[in-house]
Picture (cartoon, rainbow, N blue to C red):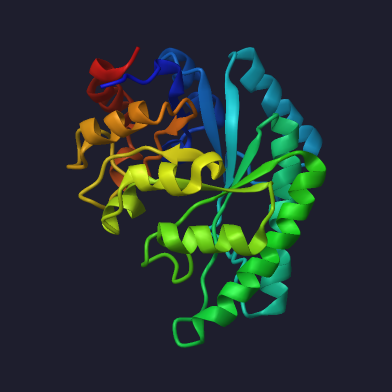
Length: 277
């Protein structure tokens, strides 16, 4: 089985929510990360609260610690952001929010911005909501192209969205928008919940597969590696088989890690250590 590089393991600030951003950044240095994925939310980096100059100041702190931002992930599940919203003002606000996020990514020198499809009302025609998402993503892909940014479209769990939750639905949307600046990604939790195979994303998306959220679960949960039951060795073998050399982000969203976020990082690194080079 091929091994992955330690440098591919990417830290994320989601579970550091109750600590200052500098605490997270210092932890990334302490645990010898080279790459981070930055979750864009208050109090760390919410694009509606900060000017580009203030974001540039945050980037200086990242640079001082010799860290690289591989993806900017604006909060879009807990906040009133929905690219499929039936209400015009909500959808227009959401599109504007992602445009600001693309600008922020440019300031952070992050090559990607993570996007999700949003959700439609569960008692309306799903295809009407999908059409709204397609229109929103087409607008954002055009804007991203001008800024030289890639949008990484992530399938969600069915409890989060009724639009893009599987690989076939992801492929359909990528084909419908048909932009070189809209690519696909996967999170191991929706993957496991749907019973999908990681290999299928490599085989079916090929060069359009650009990012992975790499976490444990039961099968849901977004847990530290070792706290769940997902097939780590199988996933790592697949990554090696397809020569995956991009980021593997540790996105811990379970509230159990909010009190001591470093513990989740330490446990995951211990679980991953035998497979890293």
